[in-house]
Length: 491
Image (cartoon, rainbow, N blue to C red; front, side):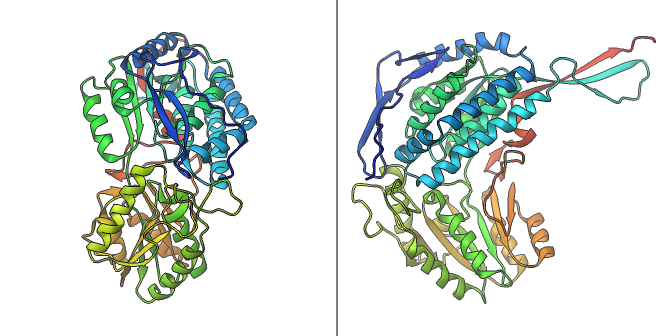
């Protein structure tokens, strides 16, 4: 393991402008998924810590809500600049704690920087008080629409993209004028706490930003239930999202949910085969398949299927799996033992259900025995009723089925409880547009990798999402809309 030299970590909570230990002094061990070795013990927050953080955020909101968009933009630009200064350390912590290769970790940090800069630009254009005038059929009255921050926002983020999902929520929340309490995943708190330090360093007023590490039961649940939290933005599993929504209903607070996916990549018979192989590989094995956007269901035209499968197996067998800090490594470990065992269980069940294992299926040769590594895995002839085909696996597992017609491909892709993303590979531009419109998914890539720009949108249909992140939609998620109707003054 090519471990970094600096093994010092931030491990405290950040509440109301200061770093402190949890009220009960409990700690959570944090492990390196590439070796299984202990890295640090971070503070385990409790409901008492949540109470302190929410109280600080509520006090800070009284003044923060009245700051101008231009003033908030200056803080966001400063955060982006500080993250850029810490780029190498943040990427190191991402690989060390999450296990993704350094190349992917650097991409994540760059995404964080771009997101804060984008929302700084949106904040600069916010109308502070007067609102936007709306044309109405009256000569005696004047109507305006004002957009105001919704209040204290609870941001609950997952372990698969530490810092990225935080930026996607935090930047628009601060831009809108909300104060926030962030709950990072207890599995990957180290990069998140370094990001919290970068945010704290720019001089935000005390209480505007708070970070409380801990478990879902001890921190997440009290945050969602807290009566002074006006908005919950959650990214995680669909099951936990359902619980969040039920709890939030007790206080009728706003909820945004980014949840699971089981997405398809459709490869038509006229596809560029080299491009198709690239897109299928990236859609299934990037971040070790630990993506809600993984296009792990490969639908391929029958006549192209043998060639595509042979090329995919060849490519999968060449992927270098191992130490995320080692040169040339393309895929790291899964995030922890529980995830490792869960994915292996899905693989075993898929074989029992009659799917044909073509390559992979276990620990890759040469990978460290102590780490949570699974080889890139490909199944063919997967039954449509199999859990392997229908359930989110969150690991490096591709499942292939063939189709005979365009409509069949669309129908099979749409036959899912989820509707987050999809990819279409075809050289027929009209077909690409037609199929993209027919797919029940919030994001469709046509002949392109899974590039996500902060200026666009993120979210899905069905059980994948409630609401949207990124773009102006991400800002609107943290705003209330107020209509003001007044009499016009005589000239």
